[in-house]
Image 1: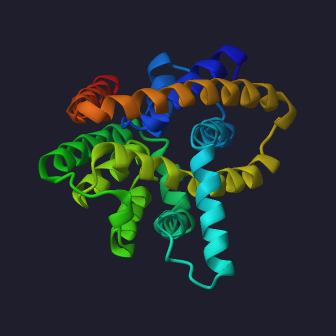
Image 2 (image 1 turned 135 degrees about the vertical axis):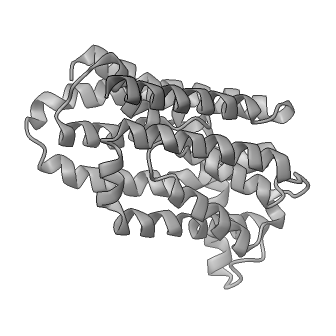
Length: 274
């Protein structure tokens, strides 16, 4: 992987991690369409570690929220009343929502990695993302604020995040749709989605670091990893800002249509290429 390829894939990661169109799908389909061929283990490690760029983006964008949540949670523990403050309660719900994906990542790691090698599977999962977005828009009531979330709501959204481990099922798309299904407004569902991505990204990066230690030609891979991470961080920050503004007044149907078109086109190309 050269620096140009790494920058292109970093930009793709940054734009599509937070837009509900599946970053993992685009990291599979873009090299496939451009006929870029990478060593499988190195490509998988790059795909996971480049998420560190989008992790930096979401931390930078929400750092005030994160400081407030951490402070409220700590003060609640010290007072032995961890759930009284709304911010502290939200912090614990975010951690609870992260558990299903963490468990699924350990249980289905090999299955998820295998899906990254199948453009047909990725394209099919994109169609599932389109359906989730349409269902969220169709049946979401959008009447509740984050302070009204219950543990069952957090687990429901967490299960959607676990489903998004498979490439093609957008993490932000699945979790925002799940938030809509639990009655959140679009901006509130997106905020919860972005905040709950942080623990999962940290965990995925830690697992990939272990794989990185065994990756062949590590020294030659590092420049590409750095370039891709920087590109993902910049574009990821911009994507968060744009999407939060977009969702204040507009629905998710545009992204559903995009996922459906790309998914169908991918399946058609799989058939054409044999």
